[in-house]
Length: 136
Figure (cartoon, one colour):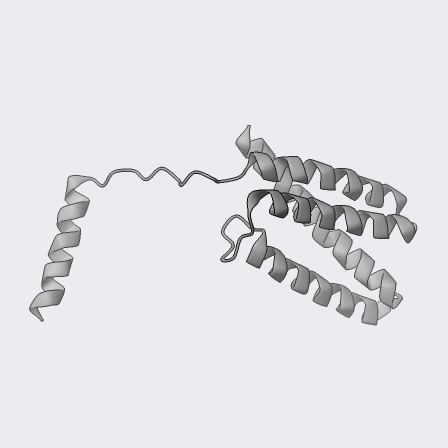
């Protein structure tokens, strides 16, 4: 089930980035300038997403604010696209924002990952390499 939720969240995040491009491009008026602004907007949003919301983010915000921020951002872009006349995609993103909130809450890694115990031969290799460094 978690794999399905993870895939669903990834697809929603991908659609969100497409929506960011479409929204930023349309705001500028389209054309080559719109494409450049759209790409820059996606880079900015992806960077912020990677910094605060992604599973391996360095400064990941807490579970509930993260879920609300990610779902809210997707819904806001959906509403913006809806206002620009992209009705179907806008509605899909608005609904996806709600789904993403639930997926983020379900996928929270509040417990640390289980580490497998080291095999005895791995430990002895590690100690041998440490010992050789100290002899030099």
